[in-house]
Length: 304
Ligand code: 13P
Ligand code: SF4
Image (cartoon, rainbow, N blue to C red; front, top):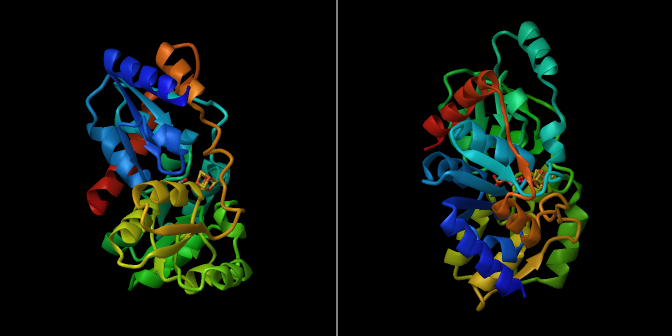
């Protein structure tokens, strides 16, 4: 049944010149039918370059907006309109406008997990895989990093010569995992390496053997000679790695690491989006696209 619907999706997307991009937090059945699956930075690059008329983005709302900003001529569809990222809604543009008036010497660095409207008032976007490189390469010394203070803290520890202010936001999934979860996992799996995402709190990162974005974690695990890993990010990464490296063992750090928004999109949603009977088409006005694009282009320029 799953294979049948996957085959029908593959047939339809070819027939209609539609590309499917999927974030790695999507389930296995979605990643298997994607043209590109990866982390937020990889999806942004793919959105810019992919040759198609329509993009179906399997992930959350801000990711579909990013595709639209980078490819305004394409139709962009989010298969399940309820799939949003709570962190992306944590900052309103008016707060940033106010901050800029009070702190004119600060550059505004926005995690890509923000709305298109917010990106219009920021200087540069970053993703978890590109943040350190981009912030280090920026000319400005004073940085407001938003919304994720855990990623911000991680970046500040890995760059030199910058002053930071942090927005006190974050990912409600990664931020609730704590040092006690690490202690329990280490007790259960004493021979495993802990690979964590920088959205986790500093106390978890300090106990980790490797810190990186979703794709950096996957790459590390695949290349490592080690055989056992505890995965300190959304649990789908452990699932994908188990399929891709059957000779190794992957354990989730905590059952709290399940993002319900990332799991909303089903194969049926994707099928309906392909048929034109479901999903949300992303529409942004030209002014928002042009202003938000500067922020994303700057990310690609400094991060590549
Ligand atoms: P990356 O894709 O940059 O690893 O970010 C993870 C995430 O939480 C996306 O919502
Ligand atoms: Fe947002 Fe966190 Fe879910 Fe990523 S894992 S989509 S940051 S809530």
